Image (tube, rainbow, N blue to C red):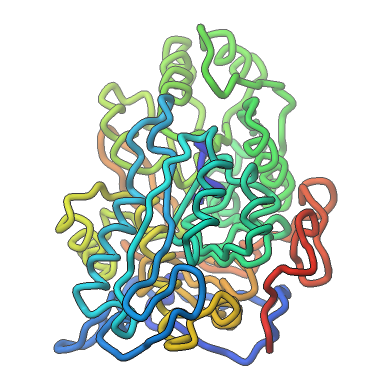
Length: 471
């Protein structure tokens, strides 16, 4: 967020918080290994007297790395690009990701940078519909994309791959970037495997409701791709999907009552939505309440946050449940990494939220690989190093995932909105996640959304100059 943080984002995912970073000798091909699982709610933070983040030893610090080794790299600086859609009028001011990247650049530079090189960032606001010029501009100067998240990132993928601009995004939305070359996410949401802990968990809590479930469709293409995967995975989890045939205009409707009535008349007891907080979500829930219709709403991770909670003063969203593979901010008292994330971003005056946690984890993943490259900091080295990181939890911010193999976490939790407060409802132990290999569902057929090669890379923009991992 994301499965995807569309604007609707995704976002974009066992908090085995004590096992952080494993540089393994596994194949660099993006195969599908079994996901490890743990239900530990917390772990020991890095010891007193050391600098780190949560359970992660800091990748930042003084050093003597030198050389203008690649575009955007000098003896003293590393130039990265980051960005979001904060300028979009339909969902304005969503700056949690860019605020996190700015804050963690400062956190890193205050320690000495990456082996002495200061990290310099250039910000790109795509405002949803202006991704292409942002990517083209970043291609001219940046070493890499780090912690970015654009709802229509697919539009820029041809240009990103064409200029060999590696990315460690906070989330991906488009199908070709989700399995794209030179791309490594801290919480992967690939085309061919879906993190589906929420579908299995909500089926345990509400076995009758999932027998009468329906998706909320919109006119946004990336939203439709996401829904197709959920329909397939939900069936494995025991869902029975109704054909309510409700599709909302992504840019809004003049009247939501007819759509709420359509769901009610169809008999939907549970509605899956990958739409974020905003007019579409708020107006639909309000219309449902006007009809005295209160189905369970199973939302994506981007629904969780301050905006949704502040809106829910009338309680129209009291049946909203949300999947989490990142620790919610409310768990800061039991998860050291969450508390530290809040401190780092607040110290820079930034906004905090789930998307910010994703961007922070992305920055830390990028910095960890960059430190390993040292004075040999090239895009090829970064692709090599990132492809070998097979166990990552961002110091405790998230469930353990496999960025190197583009495999999502096999763990998750559910949070629920009650009034203006979010709380963890499943598992009941605060900070704990439930884990199962069944929670990562293999997606097949047309729902994959694109063509993948034997290394699970999207073939659409592959060419002879693409940077692939070297063993």
